[in-house]
Length: 262
Image (cartoon, rainbow, N blue to C red; front, side, top):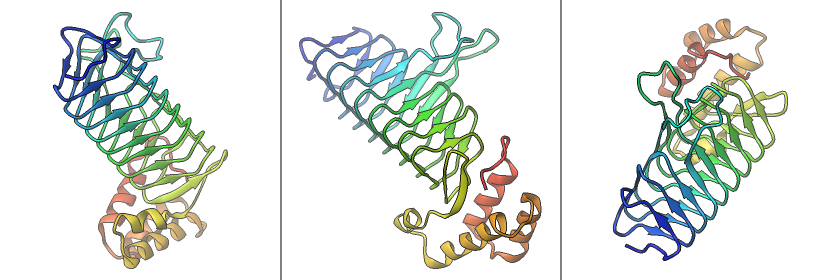
């Protein structure tokens, strides 16, 4: 097991034989680290944290740390679950799930597979981050945020508590997001607006011209027709060919709890 002599690994931590723990890092009791994972120097991995295979943590990453939530029960441990193949760059922070006084069990902060979390990005307590998500430098997710598969968040963006970023959405740099971000779309700005389908990202994910054309038609009805959201959704269902992307977009907007950025 390649553990540096200066690293501190609790005897009850579970570390795969081929995982690497580099100089001056700390791995606490309750942590599980899967095969092929590399923990760089000066990292702290703590709490009830389960980490899958082939992840990479660069220097000073802080994972599974106590949530920044005044309702957290002192000394209680929420959970942190991280999948496979993620990259956490320098000084990334991931808070554990919370435990409130009336909870019957700890909550979970979860991250899927193959994500990239750039320098100084932050995943707060009780967030759910999907697969292939990219958080650029200094992106901050507040508590209880959901980021769906394939979404990309530009640098210095802040996401409000309980907001949801839809699948394969692109959020431009320095945006201030308080509402839901619709799937497949580009959203940006301090007073954010939707600017149409994330064409380049969609093409990279195998969407053909017809699918992107349907998304353009839905965008025009939602954002350029003068209709309210309910009227636009009715028109979409009446006029746009049925498809997976139509189902996802329509259900996302109808189920939103904070309103949608359009």
